[in-house]
Image (cartoon, rainbow, N blue to C red; front, side, top):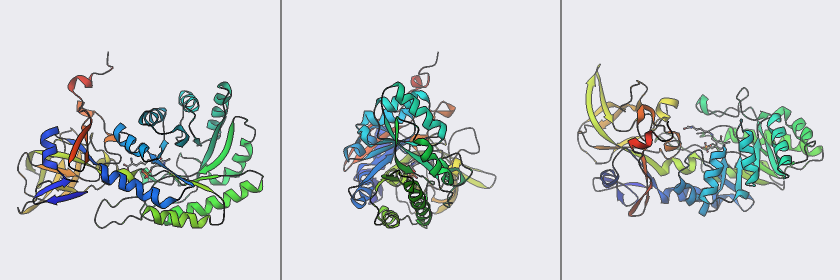
Length: 410
Ligand code: LLP
């Protein structure tokens, strides 16, 4: 949805420079059209028996969640707080699934009281806890064991989750016994099986490899008289952060996975996050100062690692573009923030036209794990967020004030 109108970079029909002037920078900006298009590329390709649960850890802004809830999305949650946010945004509890290795008793109780659809259970002790709390509340619930299929998606090591030795799920070789042992619990019903192998995955092969292992496991489980109705394949589909990258379409993911289970009467859940939100959002910032030091050029912006931690945490690449087209000669620069750490960078060695102080830059594809992972480090107030819809732009999160920095402190 980014496009140039003459020399001005626009999001849908709104000039980014006008958003910067109206709402100040640094600022998260989102395209409603892109967000909905991304969600529909899942929904339209998946068929009736498949539930698309947006992984709301990706972007949990209330307005963004509401848009997706209105489209009929379900939600993949990972904490009591996320369940609260999703319920507030209007997601039906019957479409909420809940994963996470460390669900507390309070969170389990909250999820049970709100009658969420399914727990994605990550350990035997967790299942025992859910059963006990359900008994106390005189209720019953449904679960899927999250299995660790030991496949290696080639992605950053911090976001590989389906490889042996990570903290996630139970080893797939223990799954049959786990389901058989679970029969002793009277307040939890085994309804499905879950796996999430990692994030920013650009190859379908590891998804298929995991699906084949799961198919084999299900057949062994079912030989023992149990029935696995739902297969939850998690999220993880990547996006093209750089022109050299190519991301598979959701339809390709579905065709490969559905093919593995052809002829079996199953229902499916997918939990995409990044592939729905990432390219729908961007971080707009301003060049405050320029300087040369140690043979390098630096552009110092009013956005920093606390606003977008991905570059420093995962060495992630986000394309950075000036919001005014320029014929000026290009120089190699590091784009850095004002925080007191050398790790505070948004991009390194980028060829950008010579920019003046006060010019605006767009850090692209920051709609996933951008605002959601931001902090107030260095006492930098949380940024404002704006949703663009055609030619209009609406504030969906107010910028925090200095006073907000003291919230809840005594
Ligand atoms: N389901 C589960 C159980 C997950 O843990 C995740 C993400 C997803 C679904 C959604 O995955 P996606 O479709 O977004 O790849 N902060 C990192 C990514 C962490 C992913 C955590 N789990 C980043 O900025 O790259």
